[in-house]
Amino acid sequence: MTTATVPHVIIIGSGITGLLIAQGLKKRGISYAIYDKVDPATRPRDWSMTIFWSFRHYPVLLPEELNSRIHEAQSKPYYRPTAVEELVVRNSETGEILKKVNSPYAMRVNRVGMRKLLLNGINVQYDRELIDIEYTTDGVIAHFKDGTSDKGTIIIGAEGGQSLIRRKLLGELAMPVAYPEVEMVNINVNYTHEQGKYIAENTAPHIDYGVHPKGIFFIIILRNVGDKDDYSTWTFHYVITYPKKLTGTPLKGKSNAERVSILRSLADDFAEPRQSALRWLPDDLEVPDDSVKMWSPVPWDNHDGRVTLAGDAAHAIAFYRGQGLNNATTDAAHLVSAIEKATAGEVTMADAITAYDKEVIARGQEEVALSQELAQSILDWEKFLESPIIKFGGNIPKEMSN
Image (cartoon, helix red, strand yellow):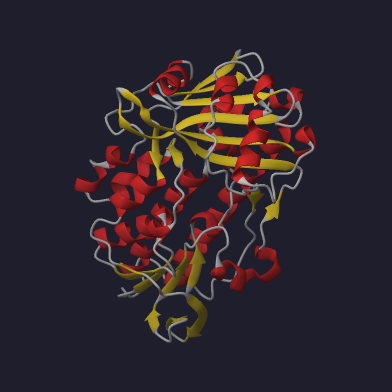
């Protein structure tokens, strides 16, 4: 046993990862402050995510009252997950189902809904942009652009894939790797009642995962449902990637109308309902300029337990297997547990954070490698048929083999 400590934890980033850490610390009565340079609620974009297996961590991180309300953040708030929640993988050229992979009690949530839920009881200090970290003999000092500062025991970088703290720790090694050979589209689409009903009734209710032998990835999922009986209130979430050479026309530099036209030009390659889903894209649909990026973690200097990373800052995992949120939640649970042990005097903070870092780096490397393998296999049909999504779906490979 070491001497019990009374830490103050500085969290940078108020996305889902940062808020989960804050909730876990608050639940244990551990002092913390959470900062963000902007309020993420002011960002117009939203998307959906799947809680595949990390739901096991929510009772540990959240107070019982909040954990019982997770359904409020679901894409379908009225739905309750069951023992059968299947990720359906299709040949999207023919519509043939290649595999159904079950993830019991998995649920679809959206980013805005999760943040709204997790903000309960958490005071985020916005307009506080971190510019520097000063390491002291007994902790750290976070320096902000507005001239203010905060002194703590440890600072956590939970500020996403472009993390400043990661860059300060690793320099050039912190830069994510882009996949320039593919175009990426991440869009939310609303249709008429009749169109939405047709698409909903002809896709898998949980996740409809489509891959075309030409190397096109096209997943159909739901971001949120307003009225379950009015399909014009259903917002569909599509992520599409395809080889740039397929259309010969890059999306970069094009207007929204031109990007919509390029997406519609792919429609004939698909079986229904993807064919109609593309043909019915609204003329005024916003099609952001996105790209596929990944970052496999390498060891960083945690300055004797004074600094660490979590979430996308600790491992930038591509969306192909839907593991970003699951690993971020696991990071939060493990990190809160490490800080709790140090607070109780079971271990030193340096040893607790070093053990956390070792696990998060190993787990992140494994998942990024699977994501890289899957991303490349989508461009090679025979390899895709033996890919991680076919073998494991969104589940943990070790658990699938047991």
